[in-house]
Amino acid sequence: MPYLIRRPGSILTAYARPGSGSSSRSPASLPPTVLDAILAGAPLPLCPSVGGRINVCIDIHHIDIPSDSHIGSRAHAWFRARKNPHVALCCRRLSHRVMSKVLPLGSPAIMTASTHQPAANGQVNGHHHYVQDTDVWKKAPVLTGTTQFEPRPDVKNIMITGGAGFMIVSFDKLDYCSSLNNTRVLEDKPNFSFYHGDITNPDQVLDCMELHDIDTVLHFAAQSHVDLSFGNSYGFTHTNVYGTHVLLESSKKVGIKRFIHISTDEVYGEIHADRDDVLESSILAPTNPYAASKAAAEMLVQSYQKSFKLPVIVVRSNNVYGPHQYPEKIIPKFTCLLNRGRPVVLHGDGRPTRRYLYAGDAADAFDTILHKGQVGQTYNVGSYNEVSNLDLCDRLLDLMKIPHDTPEQIRKWIKYTHDRPFNDQRYATNDTKLRSLGWEQKTEIAEGLRITVDWYKQFGETWWGDISHVLTPFPIVSEGEVMPDDERSMRDEPINHGENGAGQDGHQDGA
Image (cartoon, rainbow, N blue to C red; front, side, top):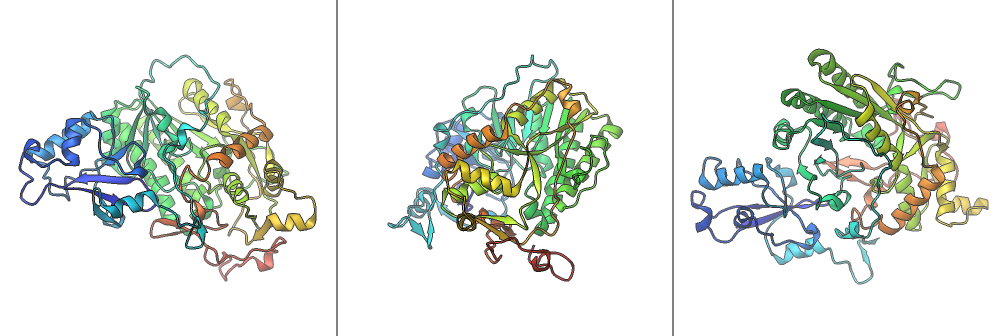
């Protein structure tokens, strides 16, 4: 009998379980099930929240379809052949933790859980209700880069990790910050495939590489939200360090011809205003668990180049922003808050600066490095738009046409809370090496912010579903889920260092 497993905030997963004692029967003699539809290559019955595709997972270890049975072997062979275009596939062991709700397919309870009908007043538990629209991608503009390189003869099949996130086999775990809406526009392209997998699972990574004959890897996938890394540092080490190690080892096994590792400018640590922009040869000095995990991953990448001659390139980029970015980062988060009529909340005094690079320019940079970058080199991807968090608020208020000329108006829309345990004041990289390959930044921050704000005003509330839990100043991780932390105090004025909520160890309480 077919079942659906629903994990809150994620796609629905379907699997088929033949009745007791039926696992040795042939598919033809089984009652109509999801498995039969899969093997027949037919479209599947879908719940509304799936949006035209259903992720099918047949667990041949835990579910009563033995791998050595006729059904199990046929299903496994079919998975590897990927013959049904209606299904996004995943062969993996199901975790008991994600089996939060198991109901028969077609159950009224499933339909209610899937459609999330709001109450008559438009609110649920006192909060406005926001529903993910899985067709919203059809209304959104298609964003493209500007580079037009001749294809490299040695690059034929590219695996992009984290492909359903912000940034072409797309390999993605579909974690909390991902959405298949980001890649649905590509689903009808003959040269695009999606593989639902976890970079920390060696079997899945190797299967994807062998299945699609991968020769090039662009490794974007990472846990990247600094605030979460203070309270969930083990998760960052597991994904960013161990996950990179799994990719490197799998790449070595299959003979990858080009491995491009996407790192961050944060590995350099804080760059004071009186210092020159740092070069690729500068010492790495990360100051938070996220940046440290990315620096550690880089060490593994470099070791595989030296020990195994793996052809690697490392890329360190400034902060990237633009449409499709999950609203845990400052620009989409503040835009969504203002769009809801709520104030933005700055950490500390709001004076730290960041250099912002529009996503289109970042995509051009990665494409330039893919086609013209030299194996064994590291490339900074920089920006000349350095903006403080406070100045960013002014720019967003302007774009949202929200008055903020008087002290009263400013206090209404800009609030302050405790700072991070440590907050780098600025990062500054020298990207001369990349510019020598022909890349240049083309989008000024004024234009990039205009495009981004317009996109979030139209699509921000329906692209991921309800994002209320990540719009708090300090979201936390509880049992693998991102949760709001509303206990932080908000003030109308910056909180000075003595009030910064530090415990005896110098860290913020509850960070």
